[in-house]
Amino acid sequence: MSGQDITDNPTYNSNGDILSDRTYTVVAIQKKDGRPMPAAQDENYPSFYVSPYIKGLKPWQVNAHTLNGGYIENVVDGVMYRIIDCDEVAMFADRGLYLGVNTGSFYNSEAFKYDENTGVLTADPNFDGASVVFDLPMDKSMANPAKAQTYLDEMLGQ
Image (spheres, rainbow, N blue to C red):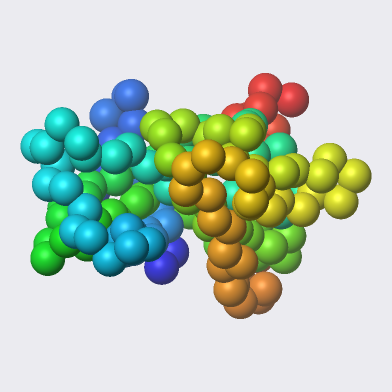
């Protein structure tokens, strides 16, 4: 879900200004073997990195961290539910979007394969941990190429 002013609990930038155009994604993570996920306070609690990625852009440059992302999570009945938020990504709808999940706290280049020629991101089946990539369906009419380019220029310092 993307939009402006769609939460009662806004996110602020470092200047104290409300970040109004946000994207929210809900993810459920559970163990493949069906065992319950440990509670957040448990020492065996695993860390996961959940991030949107824009097709054609280097995932180590454009990800949840660089998109001013954050999250909250809770384990309910053995399933980890995570709500992530970041700057609005609908402006990139014409490029296409992914949602990636990997074991760890940050983007892990060993968890994914990124083809710099095609801009395609895939999970690496040989990664020792969780690694999955989903296509995020987006209405291409939501794209705003000019806004997206300005955003990228500011973020990447170009």
